[in-house]
Image (cartoon, rainbow, N blue to C red; front, side):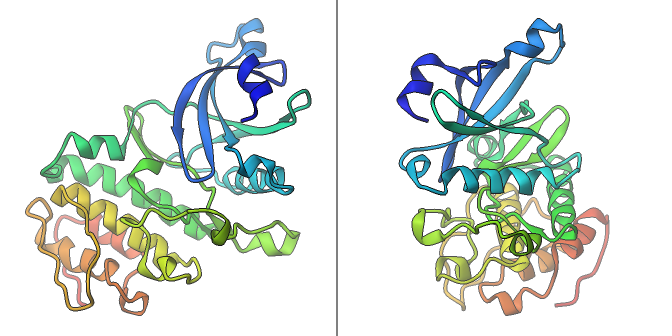
Length: 280
């Protein structure tokens, strides 16, 4: 966000920025008041606004990259995925931004800080199922999230919301000529949740998203992260996790993507059953 927009704290003559809600590899999200909706008597006049950070915002294609994320998220319509509203440019400050629903609750990374020994299964299970539902849906729409980690998952009274598709990818992008994110330009991945092949420079795939969500589920159950491993290292089974879920989660956590012999939908199926047997 440039200095002009910061000093005025008003974008497009309409959105009054209140405070920073969070920041990621490429941008920040602000809580804002929609002054137009306030004047019209709308009961819900609060929104979240995403802007690119400097120096990314100074890149020639910055607006296009932000629009790419907006278009990707706008194509998704699911109760467990954040809703985006509009893409706009403040003509005075030349700042591009998009608006989205203001999520209520706490992000999973903060929740995990309060649960150093993991969550009991009765609390973990609904979070896991709702998060997996969101990811199953995005994959059904041929969209890859690209950055599945606790900081991009909100938990509130209305359940789980998956957000931040800034590193995502859709098959339709190539058809319309939208640019892809070059990971060489950004310090994009969070090593604790990024699939090993991504850290090695490999392509984003559904198996990489699967690895990320499996890392979250393991941490929710065990209280500690998966961490860096050798191929021969074996993870201990979290005591909070039912035995019938462990084989499926182990498959999703395989270091070699060729050995992740399960999909997100199959992992969701196993997590959703009271008793199941999964054959590796």
